[in-house]
Every structure is written in structure tokens, then in C-alpha cells.
Length: 177
Image (cartoon, rainbow, N blue to C red; front, side, top):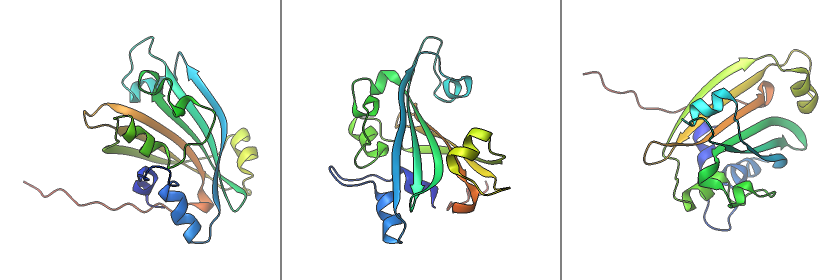
């Protein structure tokens, strides 16, 4: 998995490019909605990442991802409620083309992301939901996406079964001065 692919854009009416790429490689990748909610008091880490002030709510989309029918990841996606209220993000359906494409259409294209990736021991609930083999850790990817004004507009907090994921990052070093 290349993390940038998770922010790929799809044309109107087209499927999410990341899923299309996996299917081309013979992996049947599918999302399922677990929960849609508006949280009047978001978790502290989410409020901080989205630079919210007291009293600002967030929209939450909680999804599961399966590869070939096997649970692979649990994903919570948070948005400042003021930019997504009344949009498909707060609706009870999957978003054709993916969330990044919809955010772009809403005027909040994600132009910069910061990922924090850690390994962790799964909680009993995560272990059950992901049906993990014994002693398999999780990768946790905490991503903050910023729009053109450098406003944080999306936070993704995903736990992934480590034995099913390999992360590949590409970057260009900044020249020294």
C-alpha cells in the first residue's frame, strides 16, 4: 500500500481508485459502514488535530475494510461538522469515488497529509473484529489532511492487521542549505 493512494481522486461516478488498484491485483477489497455519528465533544486528539475550539462538533464515519472477505482494518474518519453537514459524508451510504473526491467537490481538496504510523497490541475488541491470528500486532495510521488554506479537514484513525499491510512511502529529501 502506498499511503498517497488512499487520497487518490476519482472522476464523478467512478469507483475509488485505491480499491480499483487492489482489485486489479486480484484482491477483493470492500468497505462496510459500521457507524455514522455527529460527536458534539470529539476525543481530545481529534479536536486537537482538527484545530477545533470548545463546542465545535465532528462528523464520524466508522468503516471496516475487508480483503477477500477477511477483516483487514477498522477505520474512523473525522471531519469538522461545519464543512460536511448535509452532505453525503453524514449520510448512511458508502461514498462512490471515495471521501477525498467528495471533499474536493465540496471545496476542501486535501493537498497535504501528515501520517503518524505506530505498531500496537490490539485491544480485545479489535482482536475480535479483525479476527487476528495469535500475536499479530496492528499498524495504526493517524492521518491529518489539510486543504489549500492549510486547514485540517479530515482525520483518519485506522488500525490495520499488520500481517496484511506493507506501507511504501516515497519522498524527495529537502536539499540542505
